[in-house]
Image (cartoon, rainbow, N blue to C red; front, side, top):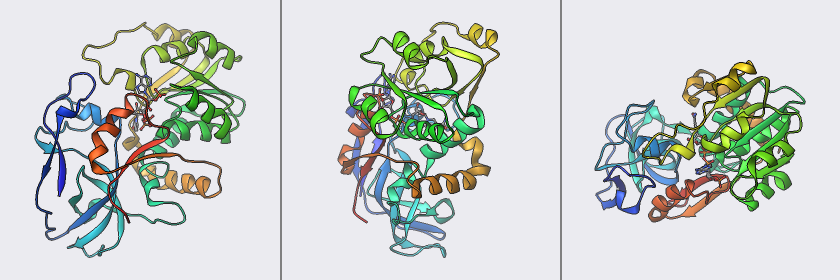
Length: 332
Ligand code: NDP
């Protein structure tokens, strides 16, 4: 059983040498536990925060222990009455070939009509993040302009499509022409800005002739400063992520934007998807309906093999993924 441990707390961009793969025997489930074989594992930007030894909404990873995150797995052996060998499940498990997990912490998933991998993308944590952040904090209304950064990623692709369903003008910001073309040509965004090549303030102004009513912020930094200069009266700004800052060693002070909020009576609110756990059922039901009706498309960027996990994780910070980044570890 290969397991990937965190052996150093990364400085700046995480390096291969911050991780170490070790071999250990396949663990055995005890009473109430289930042994799962990893089929897909999820690499997520928030994990970078857990690699620091600081207080946050989830505790830091311990050094010399396996990284844990969202997985889809297949039950190999079960000491829990609710599961038997062959079942497909999702939950938190190790970056490893096999993990032992408490049965009560798992949820069953299907591989049909949509692939089980969607439990880690559109029908999982990223989809729910988009759903609640946009609908609960953003409160989109027909005809409003919604800007989303990190638009071609796991959360951003869903935010933009829900905003379109609500009748909004949708503008995405992403880091390559391939991504901006994907947003406008395949997902139906009204416009997209390539923040690495375009003149961002001008391109945004052109893309948002009526200003910005909702800014769904996945990235922070200068991209967000440029959007916030264009907000309208009573704009809403759900703060979902700040990926542009995650690898910085010193805080980025940036321009002060509070006056923009003041003069526009705007709302800026951070949130963690778990805040909405009491409503996950509702969110899942709605997302499942939209996906099954073809109203929301999903894209997954799958790399093959546990050995590529660290590279896939690093790729999040280089923009290598279009859609949700997953690692396929074994076959169903
Ligand atoms: P993505 O699938 O969007 O992958 C990350 C993307 O971020 C990359 O593809 C890259 O795209 C972009 N990016 C990387 N570095 C930078 C940078 N310096 N400046 C601007 N863009 C950058 O990830 P997720 O959809 O899973 O997550 C998106 C955001 O939402 C993250 O900030 C994450 O932490 C947050 N999040 C928050 C949750 C919550 O509960 N609040 C839950 C889930 C996610 P590009 O090519 O466009 O640069």
